[in-house]
Length: 139
Length: 375
Image 1 (tube, rainbow over the protein chains, first blue to last red):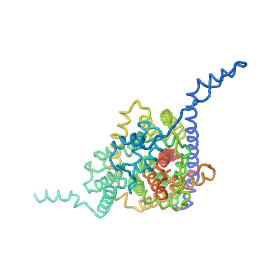
Image 2: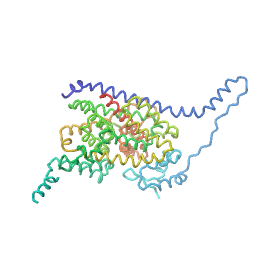
Image 3: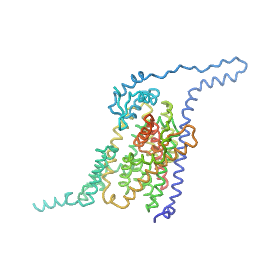
Image 4: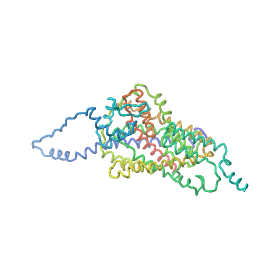
């Protein structure tokens, strides 16, 4: 049997539609769940503060001091600082290297904002692109 | 003495060879050339290519030499393919090597991985249209997931007689991603769309990376328990990597374990690809459908990204849809290179890896769903 007859006889339309729907909905649910993980973790880490706040709210008449957020002044590292941080990592890799490898090492070292840092090094021509998509460290 | 000599000569490969062995040996040479000289996915093509050479050397049957003879060494090694052991072990190593942080930072990119799996179901219909049996059609369809171990796993369960051509088709097209994907990406996107820059993803905490494999395995395997051998190992490997207390196990999983499984998987699949299975009209059909599967998977990912952009304030670069196939990191690299061609400062690699990772999960879920249809 061939053609649409074979598809219909073997329930092909139903398999394709149901299968596609199940995998799509399954990944939609996974997407929704993982998009909430960091929010739930934030709530969990701030649970004492939230509990204390709700306790304060339940005591009327007392003067409440509102603890404002403490802002730390943030400053982006300069290119020179990034060079001093990333040069030892690049020395662990053989040139030319994939940016994926540099990204993985910087993740392992828990360096902040690896994507932004690597991009800035590229813009400053410290990381030099080769023709085949690999990179070298500019001397 | 002459009789002894003639008896020996009649048992040699030279005497027993026919044109089909020669054709398959040429196929093996081609794979070795593509893997070594052109560096097309060498980790896959080199063991497969060498396996094709070894598997197609003619020999006298009945003495426990060939891969299909029950008491041969190659047959014992092939056990890992027919039972799905090697694909599961490869997934363990893959999980131990994969960093899901780019996916966790941008969960909406997981939908592109889901969309790219539509290639599997279109190919299933195409295979049925061409007259394949339902289990064969499902095994051929999974090529669209662009995942070699998943293809071998499902084919071993549903259509073990087609492991050779399906594995060869799947790995060949994975190696040809630099040829197949770029024209489709260019055809389906405008220059303006290719220039879309993605925003810097947020930092992902260690706790999120530890929780994700647990949540992932529970959600995915409750939905498709038949995907347990693949997804269970994938998420185990990832948990070993992220928990930070079993570094030794994680390092072993991402090196010795996956390398050993890859060697035996590729080599035995190559050995099993013999002329009587491979040089048939069915194999040609499988190769044709495999190219359709890859093309539709790429196209559906790109088109879905464009559909998402109709509803999103912060647009996604639609090239990322092509990275929704499971070919890690080949398709992410192609998306990145195409983005760089249009704008040398458009850095898409990490975003592409997010889509790639979700493609791995999506294709394994699809394999589980297809297998469950036939239980």
